Image (cartoon, rainbow, N blue to C red; front, side, top):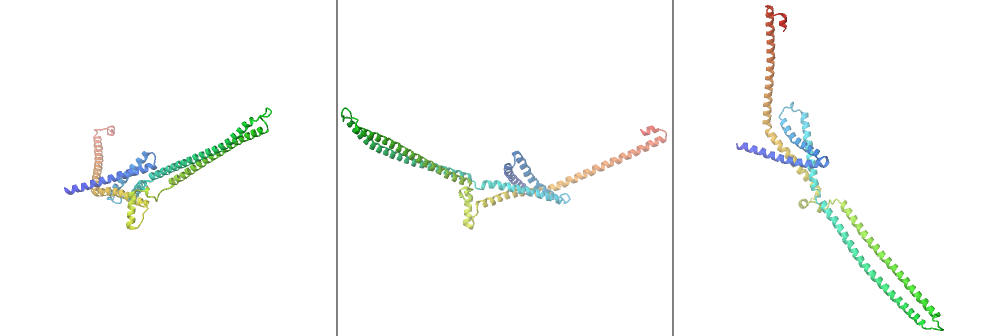
Length: 361
């Protein structure tokens, strides 16, 4: 009783393990096939069919292995082997694709976004610093221009005021009722020239100041453009970089394991090498677990199923043979009755109790 419970529990546990691994393998295979095959319903149907065929192939192979070679010929065995091997390789590849996509540089997008954001932040900070520096240059330039304008204005204003005073004084020098003599005209000419020189120098200084301000703005624009171009180049480098040798993009647990292996065995694995072998290990464990679970259950119950199958075949054979014998006996009985009936009609005809027409009927 206890032995029966033990074996039943063991088979149930194997069945649960096999079904769990089967469900995991199915979900992984569906996600991978859905990425390559559209519509998703087709990928779902294909995944269900292939995964179901995997389990069915294991069961029918071990069950039919109990039959004779005539009932399970070598060609069918080979086809079954090819089918099971193809399903195993398909599940293995799907599992490797699924795990590799999640273990290969899982932090790549996060690190890339962080570094892109850092580049843009640095570019904004540099541009702001440059604008502040040029604002100070602009303030100093305006201050210097104001000082120059004030100095020039003071210089020319003093001269103009002096000539205007001389001109007013000359107006008081009246000779014969006339004050506009040669001296007055000379002072007036010099005053006009002084005013013209003052205006020309004001215009020239204004033009120089505008040119200096324009040159400063151009230098600011060029500096900002250089910062932007440098930031764009760094952004492009970040986008194109795969960061294969950057620790930050890899899983830190994987990196810690590789560091431990390197410290003990003095051999440095690349993270992708670990991802590849780890994916193979998980895939092999899943697929062999499915094969082992359903294979052991099938092998355990195959003798019983085979015996029941042979019993049913024997019963069916006896049933068919009995039915055939009964049908043959019925046919022979009908033939004998027909002969007896014909003989009776013949005797009655000979005795004159039946005509030829009645015999025919």
